[in-house]
Image 1 (cartoon, one colour):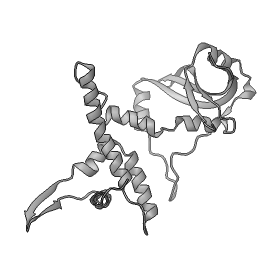
Image 2 (cartoon, rainbow, N blue to C red; image 1 turned 120 degrees about the vertical axis):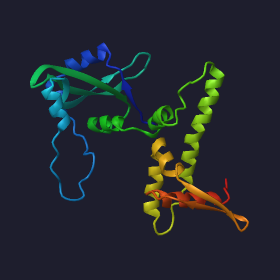
Image 3 (tube, rainbow, N blue to C red; image 1 turned 90 degrees about the horizontal axis):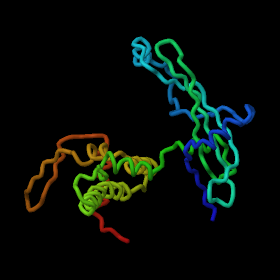
Image 4 (cartoon, rainbow, N blue to C red; image 1 turned 60 degrees about the vertical axis):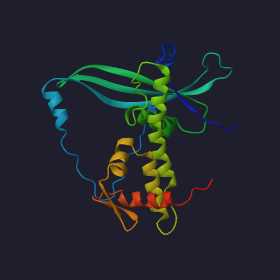
Length: 247
């Protein structure tokens, strides 16, 4: 079928034992992509005030020293074939003040059937948040659809459906935003941003907008009383919603 998957595995004792038995030559450093691209001149990093406070007050602090990856074949229980397992080894040091208490080695395992992507690419791909994970996180903490505020299953189900409808309407609004004409590329980026936008940010940008409603001359006027950077996207969405929807 051509389906590729990457599953996270628990650090079970048998997997940790296999990782511990790997030769040193099997490990190589993990290279992570930069978080952003410098568009102007690079700037010096500011002083880490929080790090200094942690050291001076001798709080316990966990610092990442290095990350390495390796791989091996493994057949999970009840599987007829073996799959590729990429293991990430994090070398952490537990410090207190200026003293290093001990080193802590932690393993993270990823099961995949992708044999072409590099091990570093597998880890980076697994660490990236996908839209489905963002959906679950926003339904839980944004729209609060998973709060379960009442005492029976049916009522909690109804509450979840009603609260998740707010997130669905937000997604529909983003999908209806047009992206054509001279500014097609810019509008496409704005559409993708709104589609992935956190629910709280969406509410503040598009819903909590002060508006004066005036009835005059047999018509209603909606006068926006404030401005925000997303107002032009909001007005573009209003124009799109005024058009008849076609299936």
